[in-house]
Length: 169
Ligand SMILES: Cc1cc2nc3c(=O)[nH]c(=O)nc-3n(C[C@H](O)[C@H](O)[C@H](O)COP(=O)(O)O)c2cc1C
Image (tube, rainbow, N blue to C red; front, side):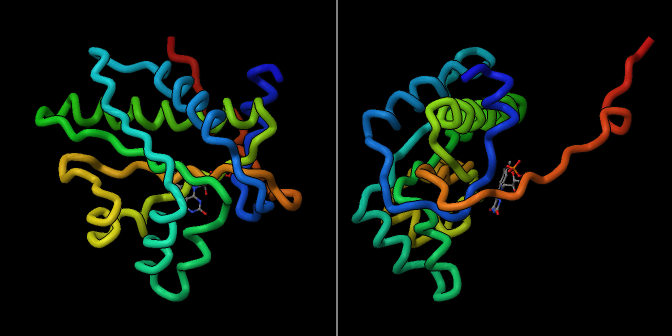
């Protein structure tokens, strides 16, 4: 799949089949993630494939009405950033990690894998961080759900270019 196709075809997916993504494929995606631009090559990102035991713990910790959201897809990857002391570096590292997440989403799309960038609300709760052994100096950035969509996804329209783009003299 060419890059432009992958950019346009990537869609936030909420309903997945039970078919998991092999850990070897997730490793490929993570390897592509770290080719994102990264000022001073700080490699600030951390990626954790959430296994069955950790998933069960997150489901247990989640409030009743959120439990289903934890297990949207059969495969989940937790992405975090190591928080630097310096504010500029902190911002740059966070932005680099967001770029790394997008690499994963696009590389997944190119492989025919559907995805969902979810805010790490449940994973960010103190008991979850404790259970998953997330060090205090890491900020959670995303839970990336990976799998195969069961149905068509809505395609939220984008802005007219005239609204978001201008050419400066
Ligand atoms: C930082 C970030 C956090 C997001 N968190 C959530 C989330 O928690 N729940 C959700 O439904 N969508 C979340 N999304 C996905 C957006 O809702 C989605 O990208 C948007 O609706 C556009 O749809 P598309 O991805 O199919 O183009 C998140 C996206 C980003 C970039």
